[in-house]
Image 1 (cartoon, rainbow, N blue to C red):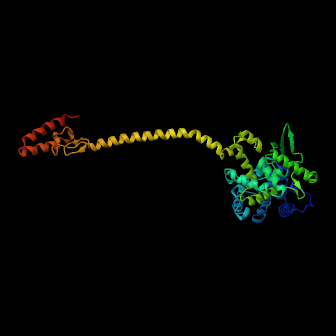
Image 2: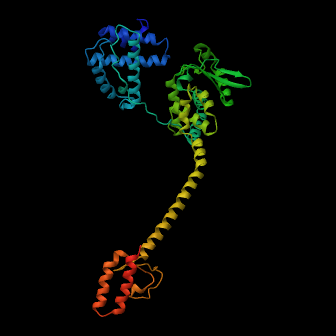
Image 3: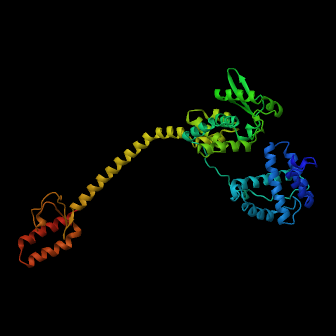
Length: 420
């Protein structure tokens, strides 16, 4: 591991650890010991990531605090470190991303957990980093290229005059490999099993290797590449190597950037992995097969692509569309029925026009022929609530010597008093 390198190594990392050791020897010793121990069960890339995080907090402790041991790191120090970490510049001068902050804090929390569990002397009494210190993990949908952009990008790759660029782009787009896996391919990674050619992908991010099927075009490209670079392949014991030396994930990234710029498409290596997975699921490939192709250790990782697949979503949506249409049709019919009922009720209420001594229930489409003598109309309706008004009208008829009208009101009053 990095801190265990020989003392004559003058690499920047070794020099940085040496500077930390001069000011805080115990701090450096504990962190170096942890990295050595972690190397027995973590992938090299994970150990490198832990080294970056430990060196970063060590530099901050030396610059901003009086703490010189791991055991001295307390809750207050972590709170201040979180504020400082969030303000650090990331790629392109922007603030450090929430995902990077989460990774750094999570790594430190695991570091404290392990050395406390191992009962090291320089371990704090309790873990100074608690769960809520770690920002929640974002779950964005994988970014992939649509079919048009993917075709445009690969056309630009095929037109490249650099055979390494063509090979790298073909590997990424055809196999879904990660950028770091490309450079670690062994010279004998291409194997023939039965009638098919396969590519053995080395142990990588998830500490597992896998075989992926090879497209015929990629088989021919590997054959040509091996023939043209056999001496370099034997010397470096890597498959993707030429006179420029072995290729790293940084070289792979630059290849994709170079080709995508010529194509006028924004892309990065991992995006080609997402693109292959999306293309596969959109064209009917089973999730289990995609998981095997990409080297996922759980189906949960593969299900992420099911969230973005337009084929599955389209099929499911089409299947329920008829049901939704039927539901909307029923709802529309129900709404129409309710409207009819409401209009009928409204018409009834409209027809029952209020009179001074009752209600006129004559339909609006019928012409009124009674003029002002509503009480003699067959559509006239009254009840007990109108009796006081009817009594006053009868008395008015008597006072004005209108015996026939007074007799009419007597009959109406009699019916109104007995009406339900």
